[in-house]
Every structure is written in C-alpha cells, then in structure tokens.
Figure 1 (cartoon, rainbow, N blue to C red):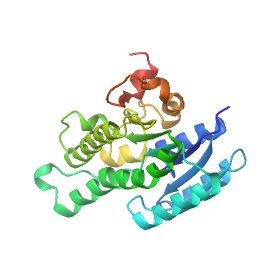
Figure 2 (tube, one colour):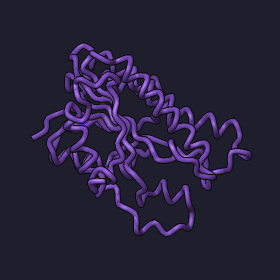
Figure 3 (spheres, rainbow, N blue to C red):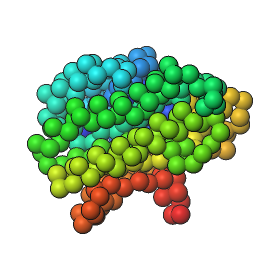
Figure 4 (cartoon, one colour):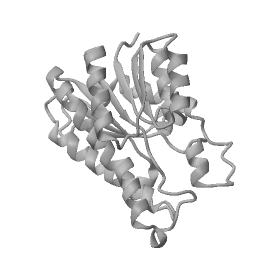
Length: 245
C-alpha cells in the first residue's frame, strides 16, 4: 500500500477530486487545496474516513496562504512526496479569441496556470531537496502543443508551464527530484463544459476513469524517468498511455 504524502491543488472538483479519491484508496496522506470551500470540505470529510487529510480553501495564486499551508503540512506529516499542480483557469468562458483577449484576463490565466505552479513548487522544493526525493507534477493539456482557435490564452499558459517544467527539471538533475508534465486528455468536466458551452461531452472520459493511470504513473515516477535520463523530465498523455498507444 502507498503511504506517500500528496499535495493536490484544485482538489474540489473534476480531476483534482478524482486524484484525491484514488490516492486515498491507495493509502496516501492528502494535502488538499482549492477555491471551492464547500466542495473541498465535503471531500475532506469523505476521505478522512479512510486516510489522513489536511484541507484548506486557498486560491493557488495566494502565495502567503499557500506558504503557510505547506509549512503546516510539513509540521503535520514531516514531508511532501508529491506536488500535483492541478488548479487551472480558462481565462474566460466562453474563451475569447486572441485578438479579443484583454490584458487582465491574459494576466490572470498566466498567473493561475504558470506562475502559481512555480511559486508552489518553490515552497515545496527545499523540503524535497533535504530528503533527496520527490515528484513535481504539473497538469497540462494538448492545447499547450496544438493550435486550437479560441484556446489561445489557456494554451499559451500551459505551453509556458511545460517549458518552465522542462527547465526546472534540468536544474534539479541529480537531486532525486523528478519533474513530470501530465496531459490527462479531453474529459467530461465542468471546466471543459465552461470552455465549450453547449457541446455534448458525454462521450469523453470521466476524471475517475483517468485518475488510476495518472496515479499509477506518479507512484512509479522513479521508473517513469530512468536514472540515466539527462533531462530529468517526462511528458505523458495519460489516456493514450492507458490505452497502450
């Protein structure tokens, strides 16, 4: 049984909730944050019946609150083995074309999707360095590598996150800390429904269908990135991986 300590942002719905439930099933202690206080507290109450849970409603961009939460987590559990930067924003719903994307919306999507994950990693990394192990997991999208009209702000932020992750991995080479970028694939989530209002998403995978392969990969992160790898980095498309593609 897995007894790792996992921090998941954006845990109150969608993939974040599914990941929390899957890790709880495997015995991991959970550190959960999200803006949705009611849903987060309900999830924490549910999962506390089967594992140790520390949850706090925090906006991922609130650096001071997140720093305090990380410190409390370390004091409580002694370590953080895995950081999953899952919290994201679209930058508007329906999403505007780039020619109509205003500066405030662009700054917000970059702040949530690219800057905040780095800031949170910066809070966790000293503790991982001290132990000589850990995994930084940044959740991305195929919009980071493909040009989808209307997805410009979101796609640009995820592209920034991916390149940031690759550089961070190079800087962490030899420390025992791995950096992974995981694309869960298209899913039937509220966020996707907000992105494409009115579209029928019923044929898409549900987050709970994707979570087991996602968690399995992270739990075996040392095998996912061979020790001989020079860049200390890996990018996976979870649904394709699960399907054996």
